[in-house]
Image 1 (cartoon, rainbow, N blue to C red):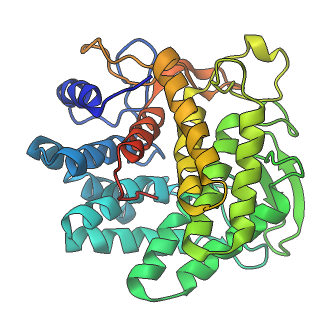
Image 2: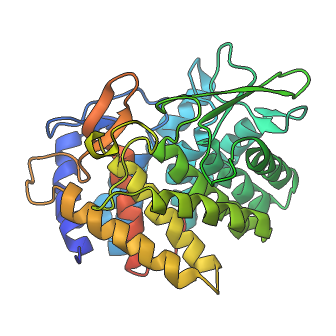
Length: 362
Protein backbone atom coordinates (compact mmCIF):
# COMPACT_ATOMS: atom_id res chain seq x y z
CA UNK A 1 0.00 0.00 0.00
CA UNK A 2 1.52 3.32 -1.09
CA UNK A 3 0.98 6.43 1.03
CA UNK A 4 2.15 9.71 -0.40
CA UNK A 5 3.39 12.56 1.76
CA UNK A 6 0.94 14.92 0.04
CA UNK A 7 -1.83 13.34 2.10
CA UNK A 8 0.15 13.86 5.30
CA UNK A 9 0.79 17.45 4.27
CA UNK A 10 -2.92 18.12 3.87
CA UNK A 11 -3.62 16.61 7.28
CA UNK A 12 -0.87 18.61 9.00
CA UNK A 13 -2.11 21.84 7.46
CA UNK A 14 -5.42 21.29 9.20
CA UNK A 15 -3.80 20.16 12.45
CA UNK A 16 -1.74 23.36 12.62
CA UNK A 17 -4.97 25.35 12.73
CA UNK A 18 -6.77 22.98 15.08
CA UNK A 19 -4.02 22.39 17.65
CA UNK A 20 -3.02 26.03 17.98
CA UNK A 21 -0.17 26.41 20.47
CA UNK A 22 -0.91 23.41 22.69
CA UNK A 23 1.53 20.57 23.36
CA UNK A 24 -0.34 17.63 21.75
CA UNK A 25 -0.17 14.29 23.56
CA UNK A 26 -2.92 11.79 22.74
CA UNK A 27 -6.23 11.83 20.91
CA UNK A 28 -8.95 9.35 21.94
CA UNK A 29 -11.69 10.97 19.84
CA UNK A 30 -10.10 13.17 17.21
CA UNK A 31 -9.14 16.00 19.60
CA UNK A 32 -5.56 16.06 20.86
CA UNK A 33 -5.29 16.43 24.63
CA UNK A 34 -2.74 18.92 25.91
CA UNK A 35 0.16 18.18 28.25
CA UNK A 36 2.85 20.15 30.06
CA UNK A 37 5.79 21.65 28.17
CA UNK A 38 8.22 19.66 30.33
CA UNK A 39 6.56 16.34 29.47
CA UNK A 40 8.65 14.00 27.33
CA UNK A 41 6.45 14.25 24.24
CA UNK A 42 6.67 18.03 23.81
CA UNK A 43 9.16 17.95 20.94
CA UNK A 44 7.35 15.60 18.59
CA UNK A 45 4.79 18.01 17.15
CA UNK A 46 7.37 20.68 16.26
CA UNK A 47 9.60 17.87 15.01
CA UNK A 48 6.90 16.89 12.54
CA UNK A 49 6.66 20.50 11.39
CA UNK A 50 10.42 20.72 10.86
CA UNK A 51 10.43 17.50 8.84
CA UNK A 52 7.63 18.80 6.63
CA UNK A 53 9.39 22.15 6.20
CA UNK A 54 12.55 20.33 5.15
CA UNK A 55 10.58 18.24 2.67
CA UNK A 56 8.36 20.97 1.21
CA UNK A 57 9.98 24.33 1.91
CA UNK A 58 6.59 25.69 3.01
CA UNK A 59 7.08 28.76 5.16
CA UNK A 60 4.03 27.97 7.30
CA UNK A 61 5.78 24.92 8.78
CA UNK A 62 8.96 26.84 9.57
CA UNK A 63 7.05 29.67 11.18
CA UNK A 64 4.98 27.33 13.35
CA UNK A 65 8.01 25.30 14.47
CA UNK A 66 10.49 28.12 14.99
CA UNK A 67 10.02 29.07 18.66
CA UNK A 68 9.54 25.61 20.14
CA UNK A 69 13.16 25.12 21.19
CA UNK A 70 13.09 28.44 23.05
CA UNK A 71 9.74 27.56 24.60
CA UNK A 72 10.94 24.20 25.95
CA UNK A 73 14.44 25.50 26.67
CA UNK A 74 13.06 28.19 29.00
CA UNK A 75 12.31 25.34 31.41
CA UNK A 76 16.02 25.12 32.22
CA UNK A 77 15.66 28.47 33.98
CA UNK A 78 12.90 27.46 36.38
CA UNK A 79 11.56 24.52 38.34
CA UNK A 80 10.56 21.77 35.93
CA UNK A 81 10.50 18.01 35.44
CA UNK A 82 13.02 17.79 32.60
CA UNK A 83 14.98 14.53 32.82
CA UNK A 84 16.51 11.78 30.65
CA UNK A 85 14.10 12.51 27.78
CA UNK A 86 15.62 15.87 26.81
CA UNK A 87 16.92 14.07 23.72
CA UNK A 88 13.37 13.52 22.53
CA UNK A 89 12.58 17.16 23.26
CA UNK A 90 15.63 18.91 21.79
CA UNK A 91 16.76 16.66 18.95
CA UNK A 92 13.34 17.26 17.41
CA UNK A 93 13.43 21.03 18.02
CA UNK A 94 16.74 22.82 18.62
CA UNK A 95 19.05 20.32 16.91
CA UNK A 96 16.81 19.74 13.89
CA UNK A 97 16.23 23.49 13.61
CA UNK A 98 20.00 24.04 13.61
CA UNK A 99 20.61 21.30 11.04
CA UNK A 100 18.01 22.76 8.69
CA UNK A 101 18.52 26.52 9.19
CA UNK A 102 21.96 26.92 10.79
CA UNK A 103 20.44 29.00 13.59
CA UNK A 104 23.14 29.56 16.22
CA UNK A 105 20.73 30.08 19.11
CA UNK A 106 19.26 26.66 18.37
CA UNK A 107 22.80 25.22 18.28
CA UNK A 108 23.52 26.60 21.75
CA UNK A 109 20.20 25.32 23.06
CA UNK A 110 21.00 21.83 21.77
CA UNK A 111 24.36 21.88 23.54
CA UNK A 112 22.68 23.10 26.73
CA UNK A 113 20.39 20.07 26.61
CA UNK A 114 23.35 17.75 25.96
CA UNK A 115 25.16 19.17 28.99
CA UNK A 116 22.06 18.52 31.08
CA UNK A 117 21.78 14.92 29.86
CA UNK A 118 25.48 14.23 30.40
CA UNK A 119 25.11 15.50 33.95
CA UNK A 120 22.71 12.63 34.71
CA UNK A 121 25.41 10.01 34.11
CA UNK A 122 26.26 7.72 37.04
CA UNK A 123 29.92 6.66 36.58
CA UNK A 124 29.69 3.85 39.16
CA UNK A 125 26.96 2.03 37.25
CA UNK A 126 27.77 3.51 33.84
CA UNK A 127 24.16 4.51 33.18
CA UNK A 128 22.14 7.66 32.59
CA UNK A 129 19.68 8.13 35.39
CA UNK A 130 15.98 8.01 34.50
CA UNK A 131 13.34 10.38 35.86
CA UNK A 132 13.70 12.47 39.00
CA UNK A 133 12.64 12.38 42.65
CA UNK A 134 13.78 9.23 44.48
CA UNK A 135 14.66 7.17 41.40
CA UNK A 136 18.40 7.78 41.65
CA UNK A 137 19.35 4.25 40.57
CA UNK A 138 16.84 3.73 37.76
CA UNK A 139 17.66 3.41 34.07
CA UNK A 140 15.23 2.73 31.22
CA UNK A 141 15.40 1.42 27.68
CA UNK A 142 13.90 4.67 26.29
CA UNK A 143 17.18 6.48 26.98
CA UNK A 144 18.79 4.57 24.11
CA UNK A 145 17.08 7.11 21.86
CA UNK A 146 18.19 10.11 23.91
CA UNK A 147 21.91 9.29 23.75
CA UNK A 148 21.91 10.48 20.13
CA UNK A 149 21.90 14.00 21.61
CA UNK A 150 25.27 13.24 23.22
CA UNK A 151 26.77 11.83 20.03
CA UNK A 152 25.62 14.93 18.16
CA UNK A 153 27.23 17.18 20.79
CA UNK A 154 30.48 15.22 20.58
CA UNK A 155 30.57 15.60 16.80
CA UNK A 156 29.76 19.32 16.94
CA UNK A 157 32.18 20.32 19.70
CA UNK A 158 34.97 17.80 19.22
CA UNK A 159 34.66 16.91 22.91
CA UNK A 160 34.66 13.09 23.15
CA UNK A 161 33.30 13.06 26.70
CA UNK A 162 29.75 13.24 25.38
CA UNK A 163 30.35 10.17 23.22
CA UNK A 164 32.08 8.34 26.10
CA UNK A 165 28.97 8.75 28.24
CA UNK A 166 26.62 7.70 25.44
CA UNK A 167 28.68 4.61 24.64
CA UNK A 168 29.05 3.63 28.29
CA UNK A 169 25.28 3.78 28.76
CA UNK A 170 24.74 1.69 25.62
CA UNK A 171 27.20 -0.92 26.90
CA UNK A 172 25.26 -1.09 30.16
CA UNK A 173 22.07 -1.69 28.18
CA UNK A 174 23.81 -4.49 26.29
CA UNK A 175 24.88 -6.10 29.54
CA UNK A 176 21.83 -5.62 31.75
CA UNK A 177 18.77 -4.86 29.59
CA UNK A 178 19.03 -7.19 26.62
CA UNK A 179 18.05 -10.83 27.08
CA UNK A 180 19.41 -13.77 25.15
CA UNK A 181 16.38 -13.98 22.85
CA UNK A 182 16.66 -10.33 21.82
CA UNK A 183 13.89 -9.04 24.10
CA UNK A 184 14.57 -6.23 26.57
CA UNK A 185 13.65 -5.01 30.03
CA UNK A 186 11.93 -1.65 30.34
CA UNK A 187 13.47 -0.63 33.68
CA UNK A 188 16.66 -1.85 35.35
CA UNK A 189 17.62 -0.64 38.82
CA UNK A 190 21.10 -0.14 40.27
CA UNK A 191 22.60 0.78 43.60
CA UNK A 192 23.46 4.40 42.79
CA UNK A 193 26.52 4.34 45.08
CA UNK A 194 28.13 1.06 44.02
CA UNK A 195 26.66 0.70 40.51
CA UNK A 196 25.58 -2.88 41.23
CA UNK A 197 22.43 -4.03 39.41
CA UNK A 198 19.66 -4.63 41.93
CA UNK A 199 16.72 -5.72 39.79
CA UNK A 200 14.39 -5.20 36.85
CA UNK A 201 10.89 -3.72 36.88
CA UNK A 202 7.98 -4.19 34.50
CA UNK A 203 7.50 -0.46 33.89
CA UNK A 204 4.88 -0.13 31.19
CA UNK A 205 5.02 -3.81 30.32
CA UNK A 206 2.74 -6.62 31.44
CA UNK A 207 5.23 -8.13 33.91
CA UNK A 208 8.88 -7.95 34.92
CA UNK A 209 9.98 -10.56 32.39
CA UNK A 210 7.48 -9.67 29.68
CA UNK A 211 8.20 -7.77 26.48
CA UNK A 212 6.79 -4.26 26.16
CA UNK A 213 6.72 -3.64 22.42
CA UNK A 214 7.52 0.06 22.47
CA UNK A 215 10.56 -0.64 24.62
CA UNK A 216 11.57 -3.24 22.07
CA UNK A 217 11.27 -0.61 19.35
CA UNK A 218 13.41 1.85 21.34
CA UNK A 219 16.08 -0.85 21.54
CA UNK A 220 16.03 -1.48 17.78
CA UNK A 221 16.31 2.17 16.85
CA UNK A 222 18.63 3.18 19.69
CA UNK A 223 21.15 0.39 19.15
CA UNK A 224 21.16 1.03 15.40
CA UNK A 225 21.90 4.70 16.08
CA UNK A 226 24.79 3.87 18.43
CA UNK A 227 26.31 1.71 15.70
CA UNK A 228 25.87 4.56 13.22
CA UNK A 229 27.81 6.89 15.49
CA UNK A 230 30.47 4.46 16.74
CA UNK A 231 30.93 1.79 14.06
CA UNK A 232 31.07 -0.78 16.88
CA UNK A 233 29.50 -3.95 15.47
CA UNK A 234 28.27 -5.07 18.90
CA UNK A 235 25.54 -2.47 18.65
CA UNK A 236 24.49 -3.39 15.11
CA UNK A 237 24.23 -7.03 16.19
CA UNK A 238 22.12 -5.97 19.18
CA UNK A 239 19.82 -3.89 16.98
CA UNK A 240 19.36 -6.84 14.64
CA UNK A 241 18.60 -9.25 17.49
CA UNK A 242 16.01 -6.85 18.87
CA UNK A 243 14.51 -6.37 15.40
CA UNK A 244 14.35 -10.12 14.73
CA UNK A 245 12.58 -10.68 18.03
CA UNK A 246 10.12 -7.87 17.24
CA UNK A 247 9.38 -9.24 13.79
CA UNK A 248 8.92 -12.85 14.93
CA UNK A 249 6.36 -11.79 17.53
CA UNK A 250 4.09 -9.87 15.18
CA UNK A 251 0.68 -11.31 14.38
CA UNK A 252 -0.85 -11.88 10.97
CA UNK A 253 -1.59 -8.19 10.36
CA UNK A 254 1.95 -7.16 11.32
CA UNK A 255 0.79 -4.66 13.95
CA UNK A 256 2.49 -5.13 17.34
CA UNK A 257 0.45 -5.75 20.45
CA UNK A 258 1.37 -3.47 23.34
CA UNK A 259 3.27 -6.34 25.04
CA UNK A 260 4.48 -9.41 23.18
CA UNK A 261 4.20 -11.62 26.27
CA UNK A 262 0.86 -10.51 27.63
CA UNK A 263 -1.56 -13.47 27.65
CA UNK A 264 -4.11 -13.81 24.86
CA UNK A 265 -2.14 -12.01 22.17
CA UNK A 266 -4.95 -12.21 19.63
CA UNK A 267 -7.14 -10.14 21.96
CA UNK A 268 -4.54 -7.68 23.24
CA UNK A 269 -4.56 -4.02 22.26
CA UNK A 270 -2.21 -2.90 19.53
CA UNK A 271 0.45 -0.25 19.91
CA UNK A 272 0.80 1.33 16.50
CA UNK A 273 3.47 3.71 17.83
CA UNK A 274 5.75 0.73 18.52
CA UNK A 275 5.32 -0.36 14.91
CA UNK A 276 6.24 3.09 13.58
CA UNK A 277 9.30 3.40 15.84
CA UNK A 278 10.48 -0.10 14.92
CA UNK A 279 10.02 0.60 11.20
CA UNK A 280 12.07 3.78 11.38
CA UNK A 281 14.74 1.95 13.39
CA UNK A 282 14.88 -0.91 10.89
CA UNK A 283 15.51 1.64 8.17
CA UNK A 284 18.60 2.75 10.12
CA UNK A 285 19.77 -0.87 10.19
CA UNK A 286 19.09 -1.12 6.46
CA UNK A 287 21.29 1.91 5.79
CA UNK A 288 24.18 0.48 7.82
CA UNK A 289 24.19 -3.23 6.96
CA UNK A 290 25.55 -4.01 3.51
CA UNK A 291 24.84 -7.73 3.74
CA UNK A 292 21.33 -7.83 5.19
CA UNK A 293 20.12 -4.28 4.68
CA UNK A 294 17.54 -5.22 2.05
CA UNK A 295 15.87 -7.63 4.50
CA UNK A 296 15.39 -4.90 7.11
CA UNK A 297 14.26 -2.46 4.44
CA UNK A 298 11.52 -4.90 3.40
CA UNK A 299 10.47 -5.48 7.00
CA UNK A 300 10.20 -1.74 7.57
CA UNK A 301 8.15 -1.28 4.42
CA UNK A 302 5.81 -4.08 5.49
CA UNK A 303 5.31 -2.47 8.90
CA UNK A 304 4.52 0.89 7.33
CA UNK A 305 2.15 -0.72 4.83
CA UNK A 306 0.29 -2.48 7.66
CA UNK A 307 0.09 0.68 9.75
CA UNK A 308 -1.22 2.56 6.74
CA UNK A 309 -3.87 -0.05 6.02
CA UNK A 310 -5.14 -0.68 9.53
CA UNK A 311 -4.22 2.33 11.67
CA UNK A 312 -4.26 5.64 9.77
CA UNK A 313 -6.86 8.37 9.60
CA UNK A 314 -5.97 10.68 6.75
CA UNK A 315 -9.32 11.59 5.21
CA UNK A 316 -11.07 13.32 8.11
CA UNK A 317 -9.54 16.78 8.19
CA UNK A 318 -11.37 17.60 11.43
CA UNK A 319 -9.77 14.58 13.14
CA UNK A 320 -6.50 15.41 14.93
CA UNK A 321 -4.13 12.50 14.79
CA UNK A 322 -2.69 10.41 11.97
CA UNK A 323 -1.85 7.01 13.45
CA UNK A 324 -4.68 5.40 15.43
CA UNK A 325 -4.67 2.36 17.78
CA UNK A 326 -1.73 3.42 19.91
CA UNK A 327 -1.29 2.39 23.53
CA UNK A 328 0.49 4.68 25.94
CA UNK A 329 0.35 2.94 29.32
CA UNK A 330 -1.78 -0.18 29.37
CA UNK A 331 -1.02 -1.29 32.99
CA UNK A 332 -2.37 2.06 34.18
CA UNK A 333 -5.20 1.93 31.61
CA UNK A 334 -4.07 5.30 30.27
CA UNK A 335 -4.03 6.33 26.60
CA UNK A 336 -5.35 3.00 25.33
CA UNK A 337 -6.46 2.72 21.68
CA UNK A 338 -5.70 6.34 20.83
CA UNK A 339 -3.65 8.45 18.47
CA UNK A 340 -0.30 9.36 20.06
CA UNK A 341 1.78 12.31 18.92
CA UNK A 342 4.97 10.23 18.99
CA UNK A 343 3.26 7.57 16.88
CA UNK A 344 2.44 10.29 14.37
CA UNK A 345 6.03 11.56 14.46
CA UNK A 346 7.76 8.25 13.84
CA UNK A 347 5.25 7.27 11.17
CA UNK A 348 5.99 10.54 9.34
CA UNK A 349 9.73 10.11 9.86
CA UNK A 350 9.67 6.59 8.41
CA UNK A 351 7.60 7.74 5.43
CA UNK A 352 10.03 10.58 4.82
CA UNK A 353 12.96 8.16 4.84
CA UNK A 354 11.17 5.89 2.39
CA UNK A 355 10.62 8.93 0.16
CA UNK A 356 14.38 9.57 0.14
CA UNK A 357 14.74 12.14 2.95
CA UNK A 358 18.39 11.92 4.06
CA UNK A 359 18.51 14.22 7.08
CA UNK A 360 18.40 12.40 10.41
CA UNK A 361 16.71 13.52 13.63
CA UNK A 362 18.26 10.99 16.04
